[in-house]
Figure 1 (cartoon, rainbow, N blue to C red):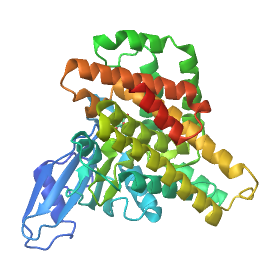
Figure 2 (spheres, rainbow, N blue to C red):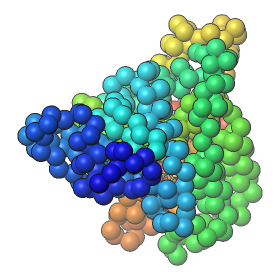
Figure 3 (tube, rainbow, N blue to C red):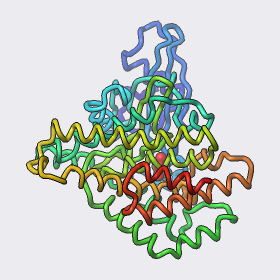
Length: 396
Ligand code: SR1
Ligand code: MG
């Protein structure tokens, strides 16, 4: 095996991943390494390498030159691995402890070596099993405020900010989002995937010109508003959690975009949980939704007061204008995410995993309805409490 010296891309096998790990000098010479490929995402290999003697582990993530979810017919840039590793490090500067530590980057092999988080659970999986994550909402609210504020014009010199905008140019991954979140689900496109029993609702959506106008506005915002360095794909499958810890992983879609996008994606993936739960269990998620926004806005506001470098920072009404815009954008982006996760190419297990047909279809109809309402009403929804009321009324 010549991986360590021959710097030409090839995808690793588990055996090769062990050899690669041995050459990193992160383990002692007598380490007894085991490896399993644990990636369940749409795009990459994720190798968990563990020393059976010391118990120490690392994660070795390798980008594939195509989208795993579709196959080799969908080529995809390997540069995303470097963007992801750099975004982890950049976000880690501001949200220490909430992202994994990066130990090594290998640009040629599109590999990032990082902290082992295998003691944690992917939040989506845990939430489906009704596991309790008391820190999740506050941690993500803080992560969002810290990473988005500190990489924005409100915190950076304009030269530094524009340098970052160019470093994090990520056109291929952005195109996936442009197509899969903002375009295909709203047209009769071949990438869409939905049960025949949803056809009436889906066609109503395709024919709803007011809805499409809102989506078009949000797509334009995604295409043009370079506000902050986003995670770019902040769903609950991009978060590891336990009762005491939260770690945000997988920022391969990172780029400079509208702040509300990250906020909205996370809220949408919580909302998906509200349509699958009842009673007290639904309440738990409603409180997560409320807390995420409250912690985000309080934290962002505090950073603004103490650290903003913008000349207009003290101009009456400007901070509130920015927070209101983030909120309304977030609701719109959440609406798009709910719709695409229900009828687009990339579904979520929260919904698809519901075995009973009637319940699954009902939950999907609710997800579509909530998505539609968020898109249409976002400008008149004035608070997160109003979102909670809307969710409660729709699910009575
Ligand atoms: C082809 S990639 C499909 C989806 O998986 C990623 O996690 C993103 O959410 C993307 O939209
Ligand atoms: Mg991902």
